[in-house]
Length: 438
Image (cartoon, rainbow, N blue to C red; front, side, top):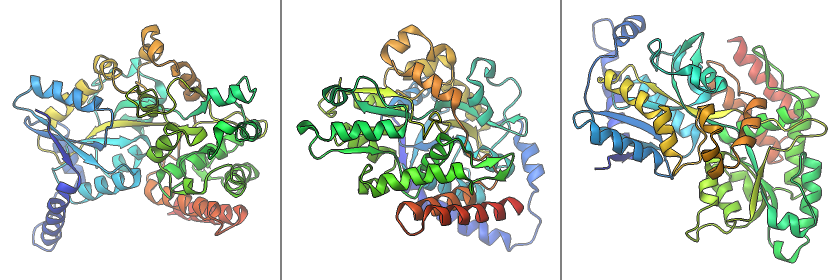
């Protein structure tokens, strides 16, 4: 039997726990220290039902793995609690649950950039030594699950940005290869959008809503212009390279290269726009591949698109932001042994391969990314491996929530014309320096 709950179902319970926690802080008696809690939790004891907390899995692949576990573990059932699609809202729910030390969440599905924050605040547990076959995983993926030399999460899937493009329209316009930079992409769009069959289409979209997705797209633009957001912990966004990256995005909106409604796009909106035939080019993650290739009539681009690396800016190669997810154990869950066993099962190479029947999320095992039988069904995996080799991580900072908010606010102000790019970057630099000094 499938067990699934939407995050709204737990909000009332979470609110009640918040009230209880606040009441307890006013009572006599000292609270257990974080160190003592961590020592007590390190044993990974306790077996029984647990909750797996994640964003929605449209493919159903994760639920299949959960169903398989539940069939084999009748006394240790896993319930799938769905969080919102927005990464920022996911993080907010997870942080709130941890701050009140609720045992509602057991296994947490975390964005790769949350490891430092959650580990530093003791909201996730360090993994036992040799709990995972990390030597068999993509090194960059393992690094995202590590904080100060200790593994705190199990790499679930890895991600690199890809450029999806309409092969049929490029061919009709006499273009033989996908663009390697923004200048080539702009020139291609001018030819494609002049075609009768491209009437009503727009050129390009990424994800530009004031959300974590904007931090990702901004980071990629800066990296693709030869810059970076931080240099050994020091903010470096008030630079010519960062200005070139942000200006490329603002110009794209101003010139109509990007449709105006893309300012509200996160990943799903962009996928739908491309899938419905409204875009020539789309920057997105590998997961959209399954939907784009659907043969049930839902995709207007089946057999009409190709995949390439994200475009560079100027003479610089395109640089993807490193994405992906890790699974971690909450120290507040009662059944930690079950949680750890479930993570080991869920992230195993065997189950990762089984999920490929439904999901195009990239596994963290190079053996699968290079498996000829897998590549036959996922022909973009070699391109993805190239993307991962050149990928840049988002800021690995403990105060990631405040850092990404500062980035989003200023980048969004530039994209919407509230500030010119120079002012936005200067203000962003000041905010990030202040956060770094705290």
